[in-house]
Length: 291
Image (cartoon, rainbow, N blue to C red):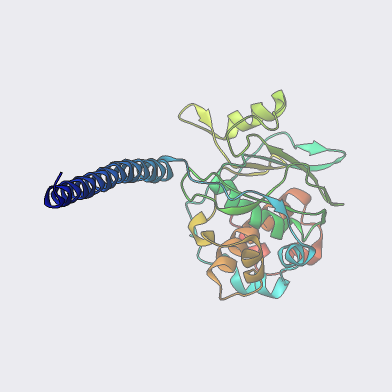
C-alpha cells in the first residue's frame, strides 16, 4: 500500500471516528434534553399539584393555648371608670337578642344560676365570651383562662376568644353553669341535661332549632345571640384584644364592654342587685331598667 493510500485511509478513519464521536455527543445531548425535559415536566406537574392542593385545602384553624397571667389580668381588671364611660357603646338601644322572662327561678347550690350554652366553633359565642368574662369578673373570681379560636370555615373565621370548658369560677352571688356543647370541629363536647335542653328549646328555638349562644340569668333575663358583631376582633391575638379593653376609645373596648354592661345588668337583676357596689354604679341601673 502506497504512502498516499495509507494517509488517505488514516484520514478517512479519523474523519469517521470524529463523525462517530460527534454523533455520540449529539445523541448524549438529545438524551439529556429528553431527560431534562421530562424532569422539568414532572417538576411542573408536581408544583401544579402543590398549588392546587394549597388552594383547595381547608383553612387552618389557629388553635388554642393557656393565656398568660398578664393577659388574664387585662380581661378581669377593666376599670369601673372605663365601663361607666363606655356605657352601652355602639350597641343599638333596641333590637338586641336580650329580653326579660317570667319563669320559676333557676337556681343551683342555693344561689341564682347563670346557665350558658355555647359552642367552640361559633364566632358569635367567641365575641360574647370576652364580654362575659369582663362582666362576671365584677361578681367573682376566674381560674386560669384558655384561649381558642372559632372555626376557620365559618363566618368571621378564627375569631380569637376563650373557652369555658372546665373553666373555674366562683362567686358568692350566683352559680355559673357552663356548657360548651360542640367543639371547633362540631363534634359533641359537653352534652346538656334534659332540664337544660328544655329551657334552651323553650326560649331559644328559631325555625325549629336551638342556637348559640344561649344565656339564662336565673330565668329572669335571657340572651339568645351576640350583642355585637365579631368582626371587631378579626385578626387580633388574645393579648391584643385584652390589652385594648381598658381603652375607652378602642372599638374593641366599646363593643366588648358595652355588651359586658348589658350582661352585668342582667346579673344584677338575677342577684337582686347584689353587690351594691357593682349594681348601683353607672350605667348599670339605667341599663337594668330597660331590660
